[in-house]
Length: 441
Ligand code: SF4
Ligand code: SF4
Image (tube, rainbow, N blue to C red; front, side):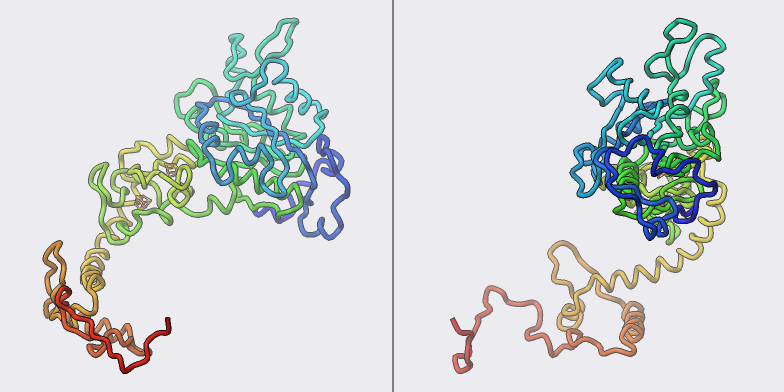
């Protein structure tokens, strides 16, 4: 869904008055601004609170986000990105506050008494707490609450339900929160589900936004911080409302498949496939699902533009996708669809590879060697074979096509070379012609 379109449902409240306390709002959005974006920009805002809740989680999303660099968490927290408000992060692991001091802002937000707008970030899937409650237990909780005069753990799912309506946005981070992920895999006893499943299709934030999903196991940290920065820019009135796809993913990050940006895609095209892990070729026959998976890790890198699954030899197992892991298991088997595409690539690639090899050999030859050195390569590193008759013929017609309609550059002309190879470097005397004017000192 392009969020530049009007939201499906009318806004439940007017965000200009219902967001829980923009600290400063010197002016309302002008009619023109309202027209530009149906949700309307907010700004200027000095501080935005970010409440981090964790459900059935391994904390991998937190770790991944702390490694983000574009932008970094530090840049968001210090408000050092020009125009962006400062982010006040409330994180169960990273915050220095603890106990009641830590929990209190969560309660203020849920009660609509916070003095600034806030977003809720949920990491991990949401267990069906009714299952645990049946035996007086709980799955995921933070802080406690009074129940029947006893203090009892406060499930994070309940906190989410209480905080979501007044939040400027609810962001699900990681595949557990976006689709259910590993905790919701077959055989789990927790009834785990995603934030979308939990809040329902009708959920809208105070700004009219459905749940925003940044999947990945673990997600690319930059994907998350960039999405937050884009939302903050919009809240400030400095940027357009970011575009999200029909599953709530940032469209500019998740519209392409892994395969399209893969550093091994050239091998796929030429029909050359890895036979075992560790081989350098395309990994589709050892279990890569990249051609049908939405993820940008190969082009963006896992961290600081480094790494990413194929870059380090790993086939794509679909960790950003709904239904992961069950729908992509067993991970060691080639996806059934790859039989047709890989067989076709093999057939076409067989001819293409050979033609390319000839052009490739020619591309590795300096023009001078062929024109004035009889095709010999003056390399001390190894013997480079001289082009045979077939190679010369193919290249002759190749050049005809290459330069048809244009002039062949002069460097391809023997007259542009003063000496034959090999140059007698040591014995080569430079004779100056004193009769000609030289450069002025
Ligand atoms: S390794 Fe996977 S993503 Fe990369 S080219 Fe092969 S099939 Fe495509
Ligand atoms: S390439 Fe595949 S396995 Fe790797 S992060 Fe992306 S979706 Fe997950």
